[in-house]
Image (cartoon, rainbow, N blue to C red; front, side, top):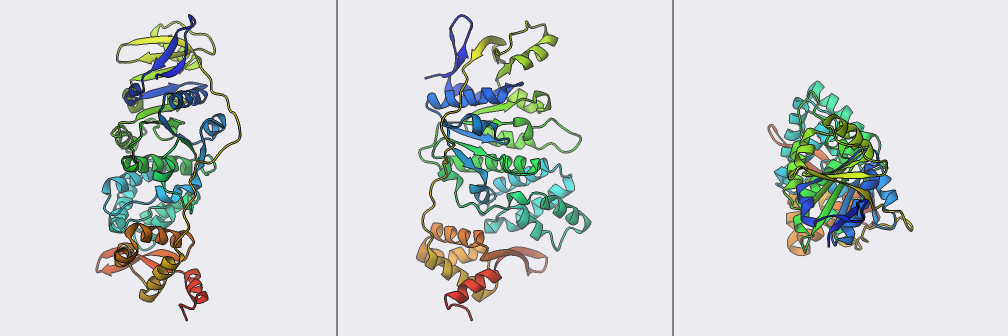
Length: 404
């Protein structure tokens, strides 16, 4: 079944094949968000799994009843977690901070060095964790970078859901509650970066369409500084999934996105402004134009609009009950040693409780504030992230008679 976009004035349907989206679809002009809703609904009807990123909330509202919504706070913790040794993911995260905060090359290099030090431990590269790592290094450069990271405190969330569980079904990730705008943009970047490392783990591998709006938040036009969004686009294009991008502010988009997307849909406003310089005929308000760059062709059509229905639903799966006994064992071990690396602690308990169970229990301890992270010097000039007990954690142990 094709992806139905609408119909021409003669009544013929305008459809795309699911495979067409792999070449990229770009929706441009005033009304592009509403067009994105129609594309999402059409992809769903065509049997594709729809994973939509919404940075402003309009997509989630207009798709109410069609696709369930995931509040971004539920998955932010997992989005900032990097698997031990996954340098490509860590690099994408660093590029996200650099791009969304418009960091200098020197600041980006400092962040990359911190991520490299922490990589062996499967770090949480949140603004708070990176800020703590900067406390004793970086000089004036580090102080300025800490101030920039402090503005992203909205990302220091304690969600308990894993991305790989959430994307088992259609969903819209709503990042609109985050503030300021840089936090929303970085949250969206982290979602796409994590998706590029996670989608292959989902079984069966989904035939999905990824919809991003507004795209100019992540793929803004080239400025005077270093250019980084190309790497994110490269990571997404390697997934073999359908990709659709929507922006009402088409003049802010990076040229790389325009070159990447073979297919473009212009609203009447965008077509009449852009086409005027190319000598194209104007179209009526409410019409849209589908352009195929490969065949240098275009067709005018009336979009099929998706209207909201029903209440907003949540797609976040229920988390399983935590293993409280294992949590207490882990907490007691950290308190006993005073400091220990995450990898060392998990390796010690994994033979008895399983690595996955240890990881989940340790995540819950960190989310509840019972265990913290501190940068310690393991050897001369070598700093690593150590797990340390918090005062709250020591009180929890004392309440169970495990701490004097």
